[in-house]
Image 1 (cartoon, rainbow, N blue to C red):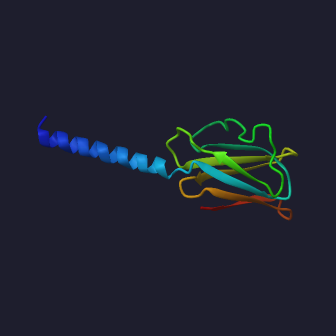
Image 2: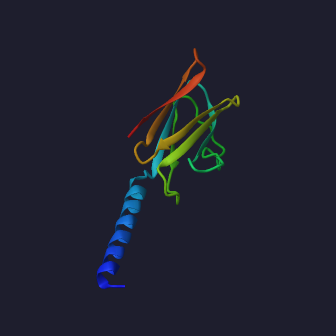
Image 3: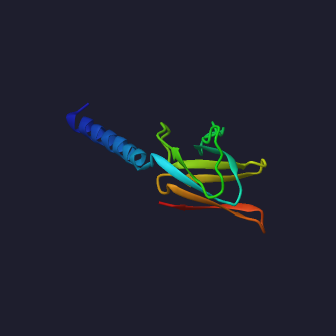
Length: 125
């Protein structure tokens, strides 16, 4: 292999690694969830969008009362910005959001609409 081809291969590899590192660097180390639903949330699950399981409840043994906020530590090894979120209320009802971009947004507030029975989420950074 000539030096010219070798240099091109090395440069291409360096660009690929640099792009991946930039995406990982953009991942926030913590996200904040604010419960503005009027109800108690007993479980919160966050997993990579590509995962087939919800993994562990990040609240562990705690609950998130209405008006409280919870900070989730996100120093994970997954190389993705796309995450899914599931909250479970203390009565067992669930709300799920797919494909949240945690490289773009890091502050999420949950609201409940009693007329429609839906929980919605607002995201900001």
